[in-house]
Length: 261
Image (cartoon, rainbow, N blue to C red; front, top):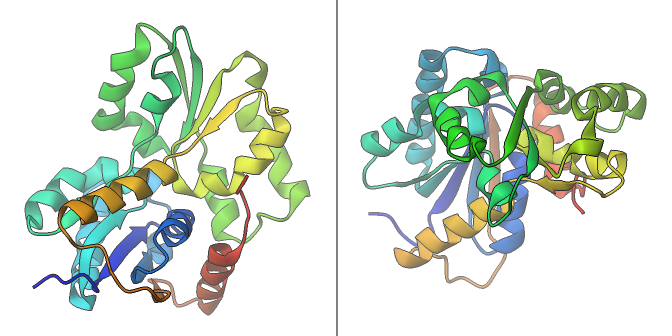
């Protein structure tokens, strides 16, 4: 039986989902969390759908074995690949996915120029293509795959400005014509402040972490599964890689303010 004190499971292809975990902990500090980073199989963005699906099922089984009341797919690529199948496979468990916050960028606005930064898989998946088609007639939507940004996070190079800035500038080039940039990958949230600096705060930078957290909170509240304890909850972090430095990096990213504004 699912209980209020059970953990919220969170997983990603690697360390990008730590940015989601960070927001969840910030808004719901009394909840217990289990995070699984699949760094040994990263990046998902360049893999086939069946490969991503296989990993997601394995990770969900692991999280369920640890005792979770909900699972957050803190990965736009994994969500695109198999969120519907996971919900069908685990009907008694709340499965919360993520998708590029394009709706937020264009909602109640006209003639918006929007650039969506994401993985190749996310941008070419039917789920995103259908969403983009909904707004394409009224807005200009430009899609840019940014695989190098994922690697920068996974390789702990976020603080190396001489490495990061040339790559980031390539993806942000031509920002002067944009109204907003949508960060369609949880790894990219760590670059949010840098992108704001590059664009001189003249372009709105949008990610889905806050909205996802509020959605998780709403679902748990509806199901009467919010943890009522008043003390700080626990956080357990696992990774498929044998590299212990990735666990250290996960904890560093969780505690850092990188990307926060």
